[in-house]
Length: 397
Image 1 (tube, rainbow, N blue to C red):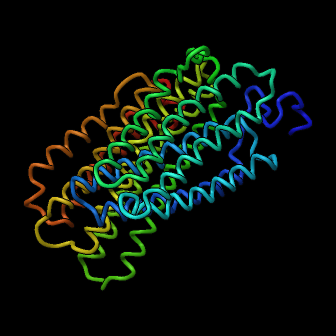
Image 2: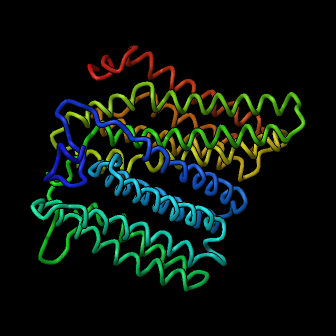
């Protein structure tokens, strides 16, 4: 690849009308984030309080952001080349430290979390800058802009690592706000100004496949946790029903995302004139609630498996209804960004989940789980029938 692109240094060779495949190095890198997703769901499970939810939300946003930024960079750089592979392997080390510290990030290992996160964000961007040839002025300017913003946020991450309690939380909120705001303001910096939309062109098929892969990571983590939890329990009729309901719910989520939306999104971004704008909205921002909903549902599945009978407590209600609800909100917005209209099936699903919340306290965790899984099945079947049998037919609607 390098020989075919001597002036592009470590950048991918983009062939018109040809999809750049996701490399094995990228898939290997993603394994770290399987662990990270597991840590996030377990941390929420054991700290399911309002302060705990705020902490876990912040940690999830950080994990998603470091992964999606890396996805952008490897959309441009070529992971088949040794230096880029080494970058990913070093990032894996940082990701393991990051993931390991998630449960105690607001306790004794906050500084380790901050150092790992800031090093990954700043280090990867510095590598990208050094890998960019001098003649690629627009790309180099983008790398400089991002490096400036991430270096600024890194200060607050590290300061938060040294701080304690509420001070740490607020410093990290400032750091995360800086990072999430920066793409919206196109990474403006003095002298260089705003980045142009044209400078953010991506290989659309690769970006769509990478984000779809993260959805698989989240769904896979949910299935693994369900299986591990079920294996440790006495197999009663209630537990078996809860296990089946959890699996059916995961399958319904897969169907809602992949049967129509994933392929339609991939084709649209591959042909989009402003692929960078669509990648920023649909895949960088709008995939966050989709993943968050799956993680929250995984928490619900474990709670229901362990306690399927009796009245549903607030943790079970919030996770069992909130998980599919957040997932559907993210999915309907994602599909709106690629189709231009709001999916009626998803809207009805959201309404049904909100109605269910009024009666949730009177239902057992098992029946609440069955009800939410049934709603997800309705959404999946409705969309499949209304949009036809193939992704191409869906586009024509």
